[in-house]
Length: 136
Length: 106
Image 1 (tube, each protein chain N blue to C red):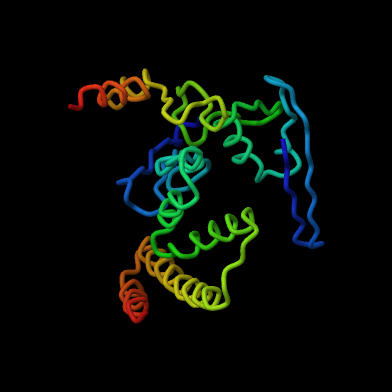
Image 2: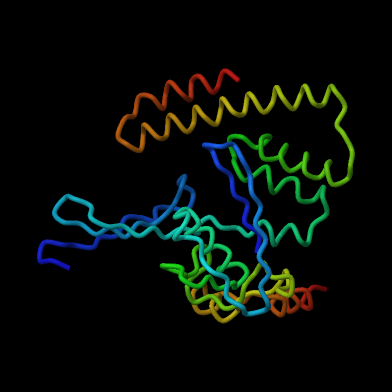
């Protein structure tokens, strides 16, 4: 490590912040010359929890994997279970699933866009994104 | 060990299965696919499989000092590294702690 090099710690912030992680940064002045990511702050061990639950009991857990697109992860799980049980959802349910997951896709992308802009210092896009998301 | 590979350029899939005995090391593929780095760390963290030749094989989700590999089938659902939890979180955990609480119920 040179005389001008410095190791600083970035994060972790509060566990409820999105994408919480810690980065150990190696700096030369303002230039980042190395980094090490420390993750796992939101690890809940859902695979282990699932081992002790019935198919129905585990459904709420997958809904919480992405809180702005709960139906999307829920649908992935339900389709996997349906495949295992060799059953098929009726046409009306399939249409409802498509409508819901498309709406969730828009909502989650709007939240991503707004908060991403916020994280790099732009406040205004967040309001536009939230205003659009609320229309659904 | 099962590796699921996908080529964007060729739109082709390949599933590679490697048998490993208990405590036997599996060669790392990080030299071929750098993105395998974190995935192999997760497999090591959860199952205790050692990848020989991995550049930085340490736990990725659980604390570095954690004892045991939770996704192994012989790792009970109520099992914890009770010593780690007691030392770092200041609480009792694991099946014995839960049975103690249940025993106190009227």
